[in-house]
Length: 196
Image (cartoon, rainbow, N blue to C red):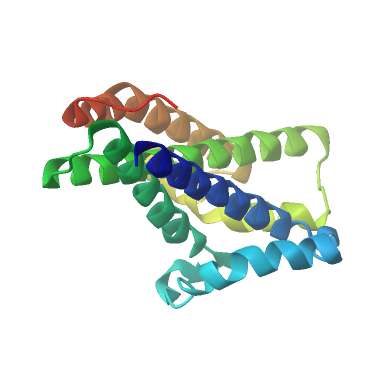
């Protein structure tokens, strides 16, 4: 039984990575054609459609509905993994596993956001006005948060590059604080955590 729970948990985690891969591929318009794309959509779209009704997570060209889709998978995988190790479950362990899954999802979103900030800052330093379509997508993702956080911290309207720098620093601080404080507290609530 424990082996079956580990296998199911690992399959769910693998499916989560396939979803992330599909989402990243979607950003690049030239890669959205052909047999590979069709197979990927056949595997992922039915599950993603379950969350497409969350309209408050869709703003213009930015669709954040895959986040809860991945979150549900991660919570399920963590609970199954914990069950495989301890063979017991309680409300506290379910909440701690859910909290840890939420933190892992937020952490990886922060990592992606940090990478996007760094790549965009490098592109701005190298080329004054990069015109590739990918920059419009990245600016659509980073523009509002960069300017809002920069305005909130600096108290005035800042340029886009300085807004990106402030956003990158905030992202790094949030990721570090969560990794050093939140994740260990949630793991301690679980008591035992499986090594995979």
